[in-house]
Image 1 (tube, rainbow, N blue to C red):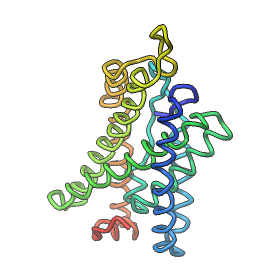
Image 2 (image 1 turned 90 degrees about the vertical axis):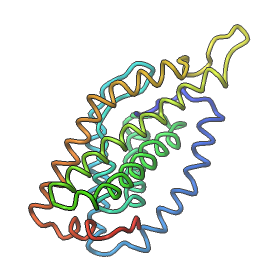
Image 3 (image 1 turned 120 degrees about the vertical axis):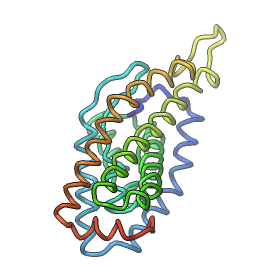
Image 4 (image 1 turned 45 degrees about the vertical axis):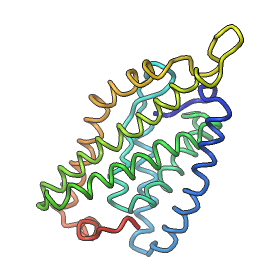
Length: 230
């Protein structure tokens, strides 16, 4: 889902930066208010984990990539605001040091991957958890949340690509940025993410949550009993 430079016009990537700026500020405040000695290492580990899993990229038609993120798993561990902060850090490092995602598209990538994914997936997990109250049930709820979150992020990425031909065309009708309309961009992104990458994300999320519950990890038990998004 990493968007490279040159695929989004200035109105889109500047709007994404404008949307992300207050979200980053809120995330920093929320994390600062809730951070303690027990959760501080988790935040650092979460950023490292997200960085690692996102490095395994598979190119997709249209200029983007498909990969797991671990966003919902991180949101369950440190809250969705903590997930936004840790994933954003991973995305910025990838863009600046490894060329994975464009510098102009950092705001767009963070909006899609660091905000949309953890929040939609975490809300899905919270909605399903009361009905699936056993350890196995919560692992299933986490897996479904991972699938939903990844596909929500893929969809918003596809929409960003798909609106470019509507916003920016040369006098001869040639697209100046992403050349694919919504019908092509959404199909190209969602087909792979709803099947392959969504299944991988769900599997990673469910397996790790199941393991942590079996090990009676203190933070996962606390999250299961708390309805706060912090």
